[in-house]
Image (cartoon, rainbow, N blue to C red; front, side, top):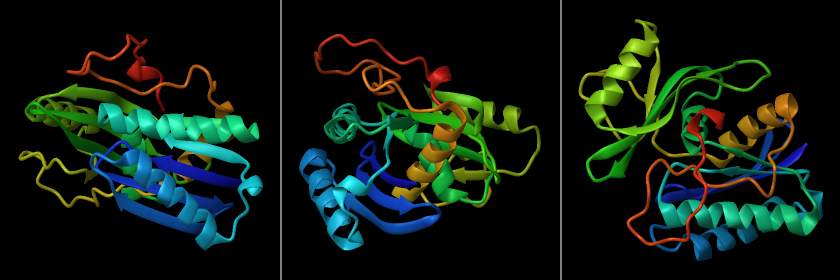
Length: 230
């Protein structure tokens, strides 16, 4: 299965094309406030560098957040447009799950914590399978103070070894961490696990995972229930 993956939830975006277990191309780009333009440039570059025709894609994978309001919406809109134009199935997964799989491609217990602004952080805890099958989620994506997320992770891991990944470094979790860079291939491989176990996401219902309301007066949207995001 050939998968095109995209994530623009954080300041650094990523695009990848994978075929089976092979990574044909993987690009990262720093976007900050220009996710739309940079993501389209990265997509075109990915197709050119991989020599993969656009009509060879079997599945579109996209990170749905949490992350920046505008950046998450840009990524999802782009991915949905690609899927709709070519009548392809699409799978949306939490960007924190993509970050976790980036740090632990062979599986394990991973806490992903990212700054969310206003003195708060996004966090989740995943139990990643080393075999086939989607991840388990002991702590679903949530928003909170760093200290509270620390306590949640400590309680949920119950003394087991785990990897800490993300740009936020909790003071109480003094242990080796993984990279804070999300990889498009991780989004692709995790989406494949979800697709094989549960099928595709509903294209019309696929929406950003917002854990709080925006400062901007955006059109009212139905918020995702974090517990329903793998």
